[in-house]
Image (cartoon, rainbow, N blue to C red; front, side, top):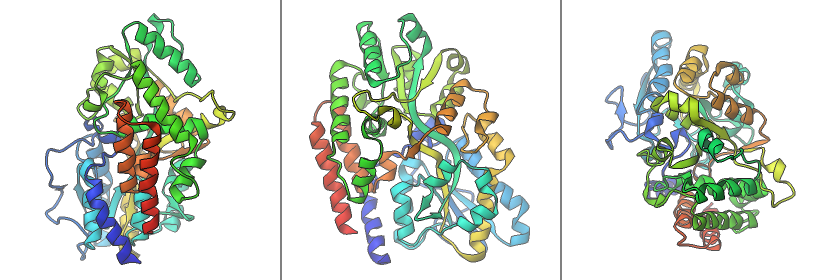
Length: 460
């Protein structure tokens, strides 16, 4: 079985090369996860990848640029300074740019050289790693360390499979929501919308005034995927998506066709930044429209709190507000579905491919991310840590609003492109992107995604 699963992981390498990772800054270099300009992993040593044996614990993560680089290195430095002499182990970190990360991790696993510790976005890929023998349950260690008292239950849930915990949440609450220019709304007598119909009225007003409703850099495809996921979730909750994932339902269900048709309709009406499929959020081409005030809204991940504050704290505090994707007023359960978060309560999760004493020491290293000093470091750098007292630590009104929404959420669904198996995620991303240029139908997107899902299920 393990060989078959490893073969599936190896095949996924070809597919993951084009998969842009969201969450974790969504590939946004301003969030500390941008391209390092090199295909070679950066490391605190020359050890390369994999479990090197001896007294070294290898740790792969995506912290290639600050502030993420400093935060991810924090636990490594603390362990090496405080525990290494007694344990005999040294943590060696390797930092890999996030758009290349999955590919390199899968290659390492396929060759039997998985690092002892590694970060992931959880979801379907982490389940594949676990099924292939490269993830160890840490439920007892998690509870013994008192992490239940530190981390939000929703964060723990995203790293829990079949009742066992497989990851320690790190970095950030990263959920989708709408950042908007408060001045533009006020100048045009617009109120924060409560329903999708309300939002469409806002967009119509903005278009009539020559203002682009939504800034959007969709060349990497995942930002457009947020719209697709947002519409589907608000229309039908999560049962259809999770059913499509396990084979009891289909990606051709009504909610996915609805999502595709909504995007097509909005694209036709001019709600999105012109040429959005050729613009890159990684290069900041979406946020520039916000700063130039030619676009009124940006629907993206909550890591933009840190991005906006770092770029111009004055502009951010004076002009930027936030609201969750509104309720769908075309269905009976719209209010219930509007309380669902799309995104991740953790952003990155540290998992482990080692056992016995090495596992205990690797886990001990990861617990340094839960210390007061490290949590304070995250807050100082514009993060919303996935911890129980996060709101008490924040003085940013937008971040507090995001935190309150998460606290009241009825459920959390990881980004589609991170939750789905790689081949299925690629089919979803490639086809849903075409909706924004009106080069495909909603039914064709649904059919292509379902075909990829069925092929994956048939291989299992």
